[in-house]
Image (cartoon, rainbow, N blue to C red; front, side, top):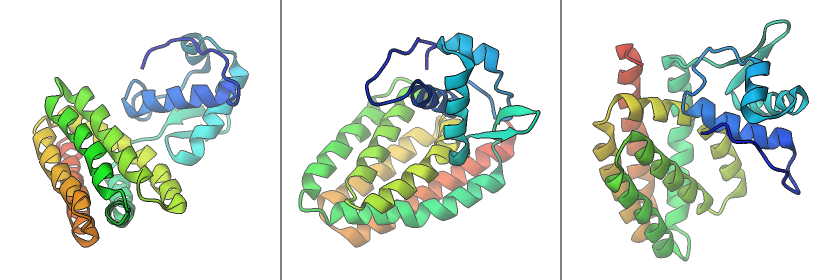
Length: 223
């Protein structure tokens, strides 16, 4: 994420644009967990006044990335093993259901083709950030292909917080990259075959394995 200034877009407020860029910066730990978000510095970074920044912070708070307290200002929410566990309890049924629904779509083979391209991008990545970005795109494609708008909204809410943990794990444990590629490939093949039950089972196991690896990273204290 760069500190590039933001131009006007017709249907989105400046605050919404700031929220999107600030969200990405928090996920990638350009703002550390627990760090105070100093309005003056952030306004200078994005080239905006305090009013749209405060709108952005208000938009980010319900998603769990930012917490605001009276007289104390806004901070990035902390990362913790307990929160990771809570997120995983939500992600396992939601993610697996999405994969099963994607496999049940009439164009499941085409969906699998798009997902496979992102798995290939993960394999070809030159560093953890490139692999992370490819994995994020893969996740977004799979969620978007499930065909259930309510499920997509629930996944989007959970994933904003989960992405922070996924980024931390990818950064601290390079060994996760080939493992995640291999397991995502199994998910893609189940979707390609139109096998909803297998897609659900493989995806549930994928999320659990990612949870276990990420939990180990957090408990190591290296992050």
